[in-house]
Length: 328
Image (cartoon, rainbow, N blue to C red; front, side, top):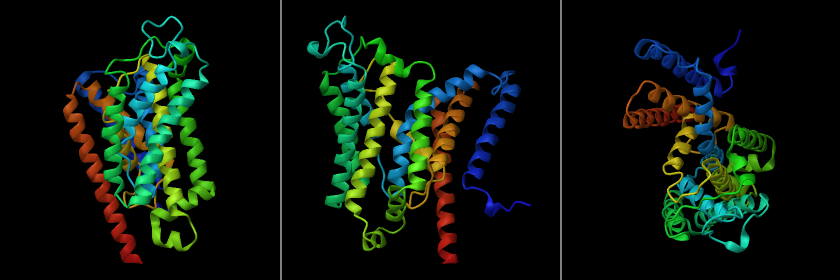
């Protein structure tokens, strides 16, 4: 006989996911006269829609486990997309950004996009680690700065005429594959490596981690750099999928990523969370968004429900923390 305590932490989150999906299935038959889950194309669209901010969420999970926060994911995505796309234009592009760098091998714009994201993440980490400025403020500053630089980079003009070899990254199921591969890699890293142990240790008790010999500053910079790199990767995949890069890309994606992480069971107090939970959280947001669209409910009501879910998840986390303190 299974006890609740023996179930994995993600079991309850997955149960919520299944419950929400079934709810929309019932509401679909009642109000629309159609099946929500029976439409394979709709399910494919859900996964494609969430895969981009899901990549960001994998990085944000690691940041939040260290008791940090990263509000810059969407803006870093846009900047990385703009810069990567400018090096991914085809040889027949009209008015290219860099005429001398047309038709480059696909690995170059990808590497540049990742590097831009990593640089932004490194700055976030360095400011947080060495100045004592709260991560909320540091990453909020990066959000504003990266979005502004993305506009300045091409004077507000989109970057188009991307090479076919580059746009393949965003075609078909590639975005979903990238998301799940990234999630699997970092799930294993957090679970089985020293990097993961240090990440959890810093989030649980930073002073104790420092006494234990962990270089907290260096590790925080590493975590934020990884988060920035994943935002850069999301930018590369997104502009490849859209076959165009614009400075407004990824707006509010940072909040969607944080929402998915919190819904997935990662504690905002740090020290607890799993990538597997985040993946389920990403899927929950995807089902909610698609379900509301399916029922023809206004976008703003979707945001209200998302906000209520986030607040509810945080309240549950606070209760869980309080119970753990009382037991201690």
